Amino acid sequence: MEIYKPPSFIQDLNFKKSIFLAGSIENGVADDWQKRFENEFKDVNGIILNPRRDEWDSSWEQSIDNPHFKSQVQWELYSLERSTLVVMYFDPNTKSQISLLELGLHLKSDKVIVCCPKGYIKKGNVDVTCDFYRVPVYETFEELVETVRLIVT
Image (cartoon, rainbow, N blue to C red; front, side):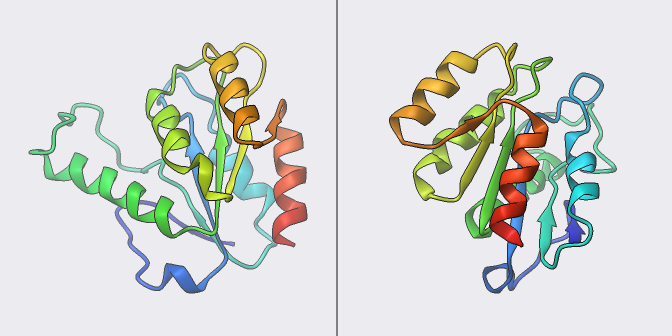
């Protein structure tokens, strides 16, 4: 897999098998599950879109007027829309409000795979909403990886 992170844009994303890694990022709190996922799929042909920006600055004001923050969010929105698969992981140590927003935006797209382990603060909401829209919820990272591997290989 080729790995892309913000701010690198891929113009022809619609023409390639691509996985967007949506889910918990909260630096210093969330497990770097994105890196573990990348390692699991390094032998697969395609693209991983990882929003965990290497040079993220937590002092950036989260405002539309901040060009760094705005470009990060636009990168994520662009990549979510054009990816062929959206993998969501809710780390039990986080609140992941933006991940919940992304789940709501893309749940009906038929391209979302969800992993929500026990202990995640809003697991009940994730489970009921996914059940309503007939999207399975996986309990472990290993089940998530196994399911994605069946889809992309």
